[in-house]
Length: 217
Image 1 (cartoon, rainbow, N blue to C red):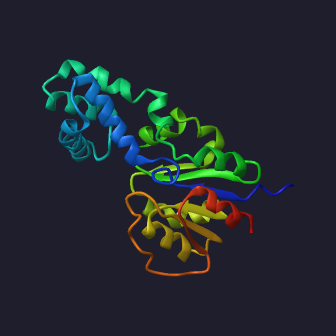
Image 2 (spheres, rainbow, N blue to C red):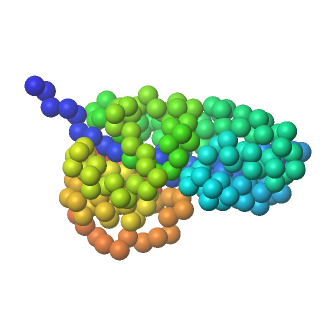
C-alpha cells in the first residue's frame, strides 16, 4: 500500500491571511455603510468585538454585527454589517501575496492541512471565500478555541512532517515534540517576539516563499 504524502500544517492568521489588513478593510466597509471614516469606527468595532467575545466566549458574526449596529445607534443596519462577511473580495484581498502561489507548488508534493485558532465559522470563511480551501484536505483542517492545548494530541494523531506558524509559543511546543521541521513566519502581531530557544528543527523566515527550500530538503 502506498504511503501517503507527508503532511504540512499551516496556521491561518499572519501565515496565510493578513489579519491586520482584514481588520482595516472591515472598518473601511463599515464606515462606508455609515458615511463615516475607519478611524471613527475603530473604537466601536473594538468594543463590539470585545463584548461579543465576553458574551459568547468567541467571535460570532451575528452577535458582533448586532452589537456594533446598536453601539452606532442604527440597529436597522444589522443586516448590512452581516453582509460584509459574505463578500469574497473582502477575504481575497486579505491574503498575503505569496499565499496562493506557494500553496499551488506544495499541493503537488505534500498533503496540506490547517491548524488554527479562533471561531471555526469565521476561520473557515477565510479559507473558503479567499479561494484557498481547495488546497487543504478536509479531514486535516483543525480549528480550536485554544490550539496550544491540542498540539500533543494532534502530533500523535497526524504526525506532520512540518508545521508553519507565526506564534513563538506554538512553534516551541511543536519543536519540543520532535516534529521534523517547525517553521516560524515572522510577520504580524508576534513579529517582534524573539524565540527563546534555538533548535535544529526550528526555522525562522519572513515570508512563505522562503519555506519552499526548507521543505524540499
